[in-house]
Length: 434
Image (cartoon, rainbow, N blue to C red; front, side, top):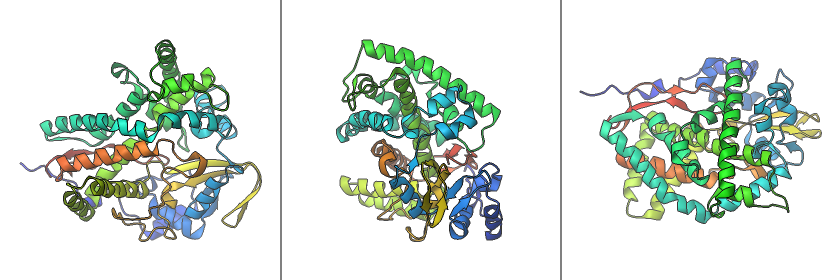
């Protein structure tokens, strides 16, 4: 019996230019229609062409051009990542979500950002990441073995989501039998970053922060008593390390552990899941990639280069993280538009990564694209500290999946997460032989 597969056109529904223009004309992050969440890129294109620095109904600004995002990323002295002002009305200053998101690395400026980043980067050296690879390969092969035994599975739950939770857990030396709640906590805390926060999301996010803090206090206390090698164990390095003559406070330490456990989960899950769904949606690119991988199978460096280019194109084409935010500490001009002091700015990474001023034929998936200047990892001082690890996970997970299941096919329409900031799928059933 042949399992029915999903036609590519059923995955990302098209949007007419007229509909895209209508959504763009009244664009509001707090009132996004379902067809935008299914396919935001036509709307981003309309905004980029007609109103690339858009004044939003709530008084903030929405940027869609690559050059404008780079300009803001580069000017960290003017555009702050600190979220105390922005998150106070969103969460309330007594909220666990507020304490977490205003203490973590990604939502802070120097000096805290500098101190934490130095400590983390010291444990994410090239050698340390190379040491991750054998365990990553073994993990991926175990997951693929289990899928092969069944002949089917889910690209997200059975594969993409199972990889980063183990890798980040290994970096922090979280005992294997204690990793069960990590993904659920991560999804709840990151879900509370969406532009519109529902009461259910708030409650889930606050509960996740409290439970994660309780767990980490015990883990940190144990690691203080039994430290590991700081060159390999990020948690030991954060506990023992000093940057600029200072150690992290207990609050800073705990919340940046939460950040580390969360940062690589959803984004890497989305990278892997989006890539494998994209290949189903773009069968000619899938065939070309398989051909190139086969042709370079006996030349490791070239084989890795083929996968590296593909991973960067997946990151560009379907950015795991679509939105970033900054606050103007003083009046500034972006893209020819004056912004007042205190302006809240949303950086649309998903739009910038399809800017035709930077990328030829940007609406096409091209896995041989060179000079790929995508902004999926940000840019400047806040560029993702774990980008090399994420790329490694992507190369190993996608490459070994395709080597094992070159004829895989979706067996039911994949279900998107339905969020604006983090773009990915929650379910994507597939069969190994389509």
